[in-house]
Length: 284
Image 1 (tube, rainbow, N blue to C red):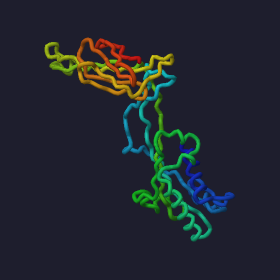
Image 2 (image 1 turned 120 degrees about the horizontal axis):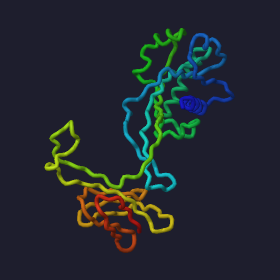
Image 3 (image 1 turned 45 degrees about the vertical axis):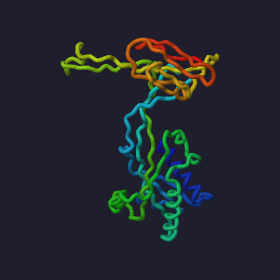
Image 4 (image 1 turned 90 degrees about the horizontal axis):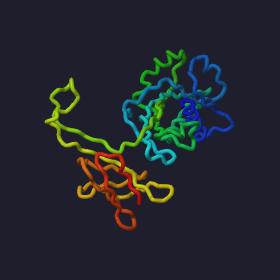
């Protein structure tokens, strides 16, 4: 993944400067004294000196994945990816200071023009990133002690510019299971906590249920229908199906209820259901 990011940055610099016939090298090496002594042409170097999780963008959520092969009765969930900041130190190397300053300016202008890395220039798997790849150049609070950095690299101090790109790393695998059709909320008094995780029988209030289903066409392929209004008759609860034809209604009390759905043409469709239950799908 980080190798693909390196290649993407190289693509941006080659296209924006532009670099023709290999007259300028773009490298991602550690700029030690021995390395710089071997350079034989103008070089832009972006040294990856740190990688850290971006705590500001951290989320601990589950997201539902789109259904595969039309299996709307199976739900697939996955945790949101981690976001990490890749910290580069950009330097330029040439035989004359004037050439270095000119190349540094052109390189900064090229990267400043792309606060979001462009998809056409992305290499490898980066075009499958779930979020935009945002970058930040020349941050005021990065590389604040260049003398210490160059001392550690055992090289002469020179102008260095911070460049940060935020990547999404996804170590999680998808899990799947049956779609929840009915879930119940129970409220009341629990006087024996924490030893007994149960409500007192005499302090229990009426259960409240939320139900979910799918509206499909009666055609052979059972295509899910989005944008259909569904209601529970006599309760005032309404919902509109999403792009997968799914809806959620509630809270409802125990007993028999009637679901009503309105097709684009024709009369409303009604279906009697038992709550709690497991079948709240409609066809029209």
